[in-house]
Length: 126
Image 1: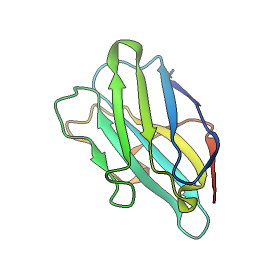
Image 2: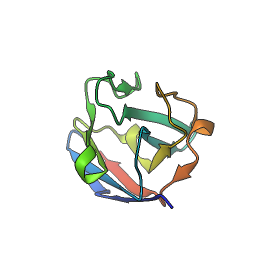
Image 3: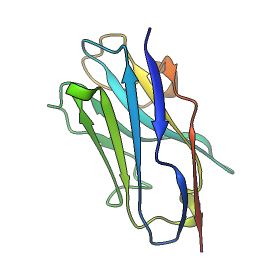
Image 4: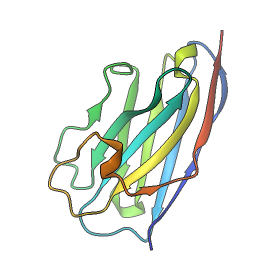
């Protein structure tokens, strides 16, 4: 059974940085790991997605492109989200999610991701 555990959220001033981690215990084979976030007024949106093979270009949402980066350590079954130049509008709950249905490519729709972590809060203040 795959379980996802996020860590690394917190509070930071605008312009600062945070790094999130997602450990996917029990995961194997081909999969996609993603970060989604729940923000006021926007609901749940995808932030970044990466394929376990590492040979696909990660998907980064336009709203965070150039500021956020996703990476994966497949040996440790861990995905990372490095967030720089944080803005107040980045405030929200960030969720790690996994598509474990043997995907060849990663989709961006939340419904493709059947396993979710509990979420971690990111608060950016001005």
